[in-house]
Image (tube, rainbow, N blue to C red; front, top):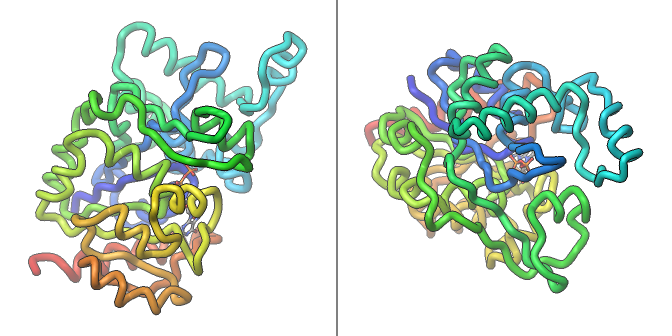
Amino acid sequence: MRVVTLAGGTGAAKLLRGLVTCVPQRDLTVIGNTGDDTEVWGLHISPDLDTVTYALAGMLDVERGWGLAGETFNCLAAMATHGAETWFNLGDRDLATHLTRTRALRDGQPLSTVTARLAAELGVAVRILPMSDDPVRTMIRTPGGRLTFQEYFVREKALVEVVGVDYDGAPSAGPAPGVVESIQTADVVIVCPSNPVTSIGPILAVPGIVDALRSTTAPVVGVSPIVGGAAVSGPAGALMRVRGLAVSPLGVAEACAPWLRRLLIDPRDRACASDLARVGVEADVADIVMTDRAQEAALARRVLEVALERRGT
Ligand code: GDP
C-alpha cells in the first residue's frame, strides 16, 4: 500500500512516527514543506524536512520538537562571540546536516537529491521529497513590514501582529521530481496535522500539486491540527484568522477544499461534523492529540482505517 503524506514539521513528525509502525518505510512518501527554509550563517536550513527526517531516524529532540536529541550548542556560543546572530538555534551535530546540504546545493545538486541522501545516511527508508526544488518562501506580513517565517516564529516568537501571508516564488515553482507522480499513484493520501497556512499552504501553492490531489483516485484524508478552537501548538490559529479561515476543523477543511474527502477531528469538535458535511468533507471523530508513541501509532492506524473504508466508493 503506497501511502503519501503532506507534511510540515512537529505535528507531522508525530503522525509519521506512528505511520511507520503500520506501513513499511519504503511504502511511505513524505511531501515536505520548504516554505520555512532559510539561510543562517550562509547555510541552507530546511527545518521541516529535518524535523521529519530526524523523527523517522529516531533522533529528534522530542521535547523541543526540533533538532537532535542530546544536542550541544558550542558552535552557537562561539558564533555569539564573533557577533553573529544567534536567535536561530543550530546545534553542533545538526550543523553537519546543514553543511552537507549547503555544499551539495552549491555543487548544483537539487534539494530533492540531497534530501534523499541525508535521509538514507541517517538510516531512513521513507521517501522524503521536498515539495519543490525551487525556492518558495513563506513571508509573514506585519504592520512593520514583511518577515520570513523563521523571523516571525523563532525571533519574534509569533508575538507580532500579522496582516497577511505570502508564498514568494510559488507561482513560478514546480513540484519536485516524484511529487505529482506519487500523489497520482498513491493508495492513500494523508494530510498530516500541520499548520494549514504555513506548512500545508505552501505545498498547495506549488502549481500542479492541487491538480494532482484533485485527480488522484486515492482517498485523501486529513487530521485536524485544530482542537477545541485552538492549535494543539504553534501559531496556526492566528494565521488562519488572517487568511479568513475559521479556527476550527471547518477552517482546516476549507483550506483543503475541494479535494479533501475525510477529516479526523477531536471529540470536542464533534459538533463541527455537519459544517464539514456542507463543504463536502466527512468527519471522523477520533483521539487526535498525540502525547506519546502509543497515541501516534493508534492515530496512524485509525487514519489508515478511515482512508481504506472509503476505498472504491
Ligand atoms: P511546524 O512547521 O513545526 O509548525 O510543523 P507542523 O505544521 O507540522 O506542526 C504544527 C501543527 O501541528 C500545529 O498546527 C499543531 O496544532 C499541530 N499539532 C501538533 N501536535 C499535534 C497533535 O498531537 N495532534 C494534532 N491533531 N495536531 C497537532
